[in-house]
Amino acid sequence: GQDYILDYSRGVIHFMRIIQDNFIIAICYRDGSSVRHPGEGFRMIKKKQDSLYDKYYLKNRYYLGSKRVEEDEFVLRIRDLSGKVIFDFARPQDYPEYEVEVDYDEGILEIFKPSAPDPAQPFPEAYPPSSLHRHTIYTEYVHRIDAFFLSPDVIPDSEKVYMDGELLTRDVDYLLDYSSGFLSFIDPGRITPDTVIKVDYEWMPFMGRAAPILGVRGEYFFGEQVSLGSTFISHSSPATREIPQ
Image 1: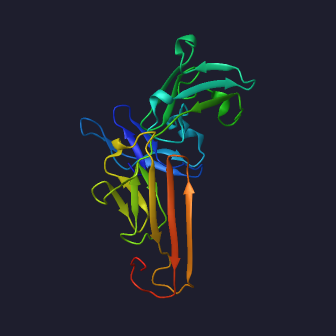
Image 2: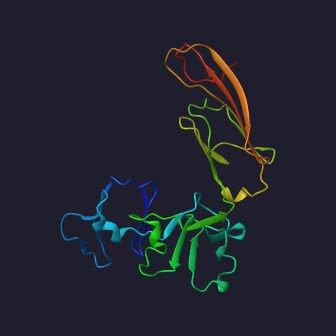
């Protein structure tokens, strides 16, 4: 869940981070009969830029950039370099030479056709050694956000979280990790595209270290629906974290 996601039915690993060219990746696993593969040691699936292991790399999967994509708002088109639409996800019956699936929860686009000569490479000229740009994948979508990052070192009990004007209660309506500033909502189903979320809080970095007195108040509006307010306070005293009086 943190470093990778494994599709057990298909045997596909989706890494949650960018895999650099110089990475080395090895695996071992047990099948449904508890037989270990390989019998001993590990199986190499990536060894830096060695092309011998390219067969393990699925090049027909594309990350959209966000998870929890709303299906009803999703737009996908594949265009050639002249801008001509050669595939429209909204009208797949008009493009029988293409087969495209979307995992809306994980934000993964997978192209099964065209598949010649290699099903794992629908656009073979796009990959080394040629790496030619022949097509553009265009998407529009709306995705759900159930968690937010505030500033680190939030002063405990300084936050006020509002949803549609209602003041929420910590540990009942939301969870907030004060050290990291990670804010999540216990019932994400309450958040709709029209929900207005407002957060006021105070934070104090450099705790326990000398620092000059400094105070700044700022607000940032992500749009009409979400705004964050923050107060920055630091001082030279290593006092415990408390709300300033």
